[in-house]
Image (cartoon, rainbow, N blue to C red; front, side, top):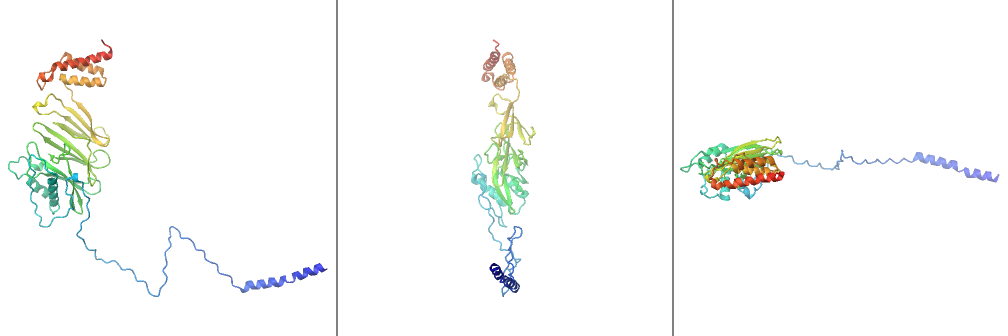
Length: 400
């Protein structure tokens, strides 16, 4: 019994406690849930919301239609290298009353100085920027070239201008052949300067004076523009120029090939590309996309030139430059050249050909077409050397 009474007393307080707790849950308000802040996403960056103020925020000023004041300072132009032979200063438009006068020509028999060439190119540039057309400027320069008495020939044959996108920048450049003042043309000369111009902000800006052929000649002779195109199949534009110049007895034909990158001229030949009294062919003869230059000739007109025969020269694009890749002499029945060709056959171990050529010299030498006296050619020495060549073939074959 005592145990049961104790159990009843312990449970008598449970009911009031439960009632009180239930009433408390009804009377007290439940706390409001706190909103969860989501992090901003990459596609929707958060924007700051300004706090409200008692005064309105002034709006930013609107753009006016008045353009900014125009300054007289021209935009910077790249400075060409000294070897470009063009003026180094800023190019500007000449005044409205600009009246050019011909400069004193360089002295005959002497090479013009770099300073003289720069001054002349600067004068031509000012004429081009004075509002005159290119054709008018070239006509005036041609007149300046023929003012001296006794000048022969017509320099207009070497005066030309061609516009093309030479550096692949989407805008055309100008390549011009401008004559030398008071030089005209003669039987063996017709000089000009080959000047490449950029056009920037509607101004002609000289970039380079292309050297003539053979290399490093400031003046070009009988200059002709052959092609502005992708000459060597490298995806870029190149310039191909042809010239012809003469000495006292011999005339030469030469090519200049180069590329303009907008700031510098790059000569793309490993050495001179020229030959005397030649037949020139420019074509893609091997189908690789690059043009080859084939010359056939090479004999000199001088009386003292000695015994000679034509050669076929082939220049091709190889290892980043145009190089002489073949030098093939034309066949000849003269004993001297038969002996030389037998030597070449020996070097190639072509025993049959070497023996055939050498025996023709030993057995039937014909010096009747020699261009020089026989005593200078040395007939006996030529025949003797051919005999040694024949003996070498016999020895190689074991034919005692």
